[in-house]
Amino acid sequence: MAELGWLGVVRHGQSTGNVRAEEAELARTEVIDIAERDADVPLTDLGQDQARAVGKWLAGLSEAQRPEAVVVSPYLRARQTAELALDGLGVPVRVDERLRDRELGALDRLTRAGVEARLPGEAHQRRRLGKLYYRPPGGESWADVLLRLRSLRRDLREDHPGGRVLLVAHDALALLLRYLVEGLGEEELLRLARTTAMANGSISSWRLEGGVLRPERFNFVEHLHAAGTVSTSQEDVRAEAG
Image (cartoon, rainbow, N blue to C red):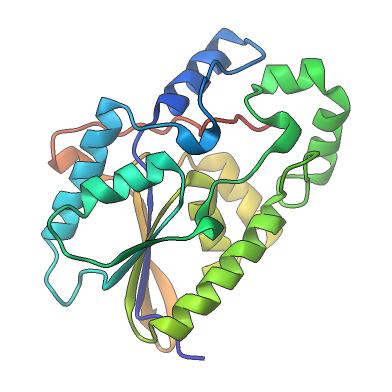
């Protein structure tokens, strides 16, 4: 199967859920105060500025460098990011539910302190199994999310052989794409997760070289600074245990 010529992923801009999650973690409250479903959490004003900064970066690329197709998570914050970033560029966009954020089931909207206090057995199981394989009740493990990404990548390679595709999604998916595309091991993935905070509006990408997609940039934020906005890296709406 032919490989893509270029693959990029943008993490959505800062959302109201990111802000509330950070506030809850700092205050060590047990529940994140979010009224909406995770799928309906919107961007903040800063998040909108970050999305526009992505758009300026895309507009500055040559015609031959711009993505020929964009695939977006169905969650509102990702769709808003794509809409603002792609305004006026005329790039085809489609929504694909395989790019939705990881579902945390029973842990939804709980902070780390909340999981420890309300579901200590799950907190223990999470530590024992690790992020890649732990599946919360009613939710997904990272391995489950990887199955979605493998399916999507296969379809993209079939639909756009040698083409340039941009994804707009979430922090965990950007990390898992590195695992998938670069063939990382579990230890490498977990080390990356411990040491990297994926920035809102960040860009990661891989370019085809010698028949293989090779890393081009990771968690890139210079376009944010160039546009006069700031970089943020708050966790997504649902904080994970451990």
